[in-house]
Length: 223
Image (cartoon, rainbow, N blue to C red; front, side, top):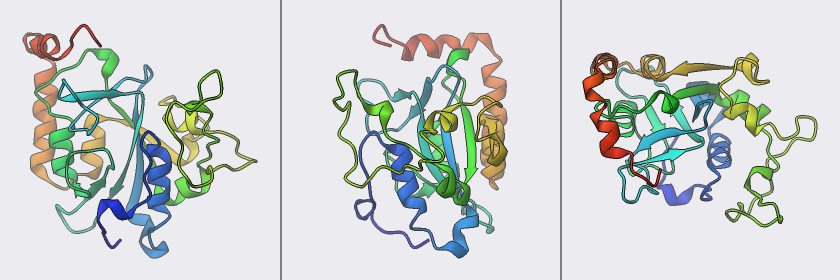
């Protein structure tokens, strides 16, 4: 896919699932097989991620869910991540994205464990459907103004966003997607040995209870 400046793409704040859908729709059909959509979440809908534009007093934000696009290239060390909300370049290398978005030296409590639902971009274009109900308040007003384009909604599918966000094996998306933890996510998309070694260090680091001091440092009373 030819890369343009981020401003040239369709984007609406707080609608990452639709932003990525619109991005997938721009990929030439013959290249679509190299692209994968990833939903980032967990059963508590509390996913910590660093280097996001919305981060303020803390170096990270905790999304209920987030959506990114990954281009898995054949040539070593060239896979890329497209994330409209990162402070990193757009796109950025997969290795750098993991390094800065999921720094191993910060250990979060178990309820913030990171999981990823991976879907081929082609399947995402065929299956995703949302009527945007999740962005409406009880009085019918919007939590955040919706995109100018029409909702990506398929009547036969209904509103299935929650099934993409869910990390449950019982999700209706299970037949065309897979859920992996952070280590498997990195290993699946990384052809960079340094990135894989970083994740090995992360596992060792996480197992040391003495390192949980970072939790106290980064979890404040406003969480």
